[in-house]
Image 1 (cartoon, one colour):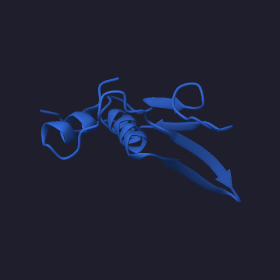
Image 2: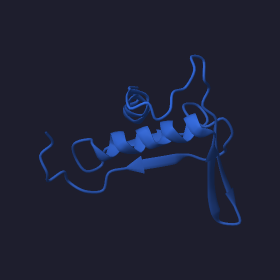
Image 3: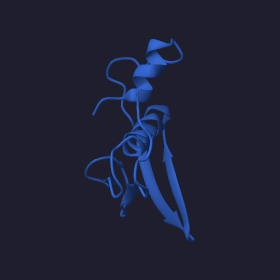
Image 4: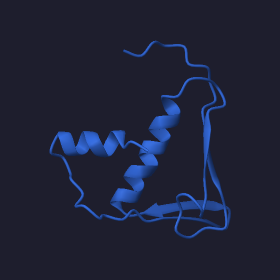
Length: 91
């Protein structure tokens, strides 16, 4: 997956991650609270997923994030979904 946010941060000399940087993320539910934690790179990658869904075309566009494809430690799944039709034109 392309990293829109990471590429933007690097291009604008805001932050750069050394080669070999590893993202870490965990998802837990404790007493009904959803706790999503991660290191800086992990949270930026989550923001990239959210941005990717927000920029996708069509209601229902979504992604499933779980221990097999994003989280280092979880028994749960996070689903990010677009809940509106895209009504604006991108440039």
